[in-house]
Length: 193
Image 1 (spheres, helix red, strand yellow):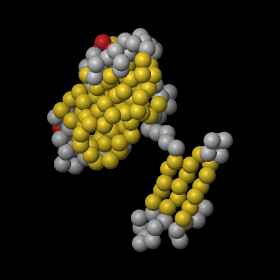
Image 2 (cartoon, rainbow, N blue to C red):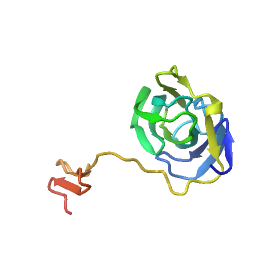
Image 3 (cartoon, helix red, strand yellow):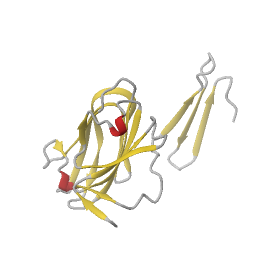
């Protein structure tokens, strides 16, 4: 990792929700836990990207738990392991992922604070040998080089698009079968492919 720095991750804050708008603040976080975070005096209606690396102490299967207000997505080692892009409050466990001991892997988080919400974000990890708790700062790192490509993407088995402009139910579902072929299933009166 070029320009490698230990004891923190980068957080970029955008002036609008959904990771759009202009970047209004960039900071280094020494932990993945904060409350009342108000970058550029924003108190709500903003979004953040948290970019860095984590280094587990043990070769084991890990679970990442995020307690937050509003919306969050979490990728570890390029794999989407938590997708909760709904306005909600509370704890959200991820799916599990196997990580190798003392090997730095990328972590990427999208976090959004909606209107009227107080910023709250707590990320914890656990494994057989790691008691659930915050990731120690010496197990966090960042790279001064920007990512080679945008990580504003997520992977899932299917995607359904809803047309809410009409009173009838109109949906289009895109999915990929086991052979890798794209399947498009359109239903409703206003769908044309």
